[in-house]
Length: 134
Image (tube, rainbow, N blue to C red):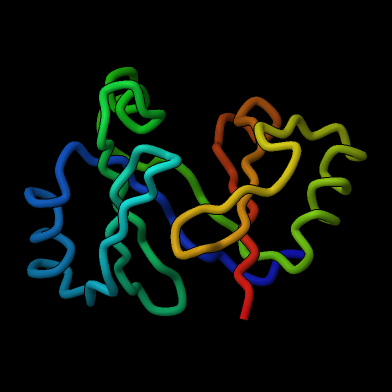
């Protein structure tokens, strides 16, 4: 079911001020930066071994990431688990009583198909299912 930890999402106010810690201090390679307009976020992808870190910067004050930062401050936002057949995983989660934020997969950063579980179903952790094609 779960192939690996695909990435860890970290909410930040500014990529410009945050990236130097990850690239210069931790020496993690920057893979790229992408804007995901549908989620009102800019994402910086960093390679951390087999896992990626995604720094999430809000592009508007009404974005989910901006609201998260306002409520909780900067920090870990979610953990993404790589899966095969995300549609089947969503059905399986719902059958097991897991409350899904996304009833259907949607397109996320890097073109991945994603779906989030509600944190109340995962002991307060926002868990993302992530299927990457190809």
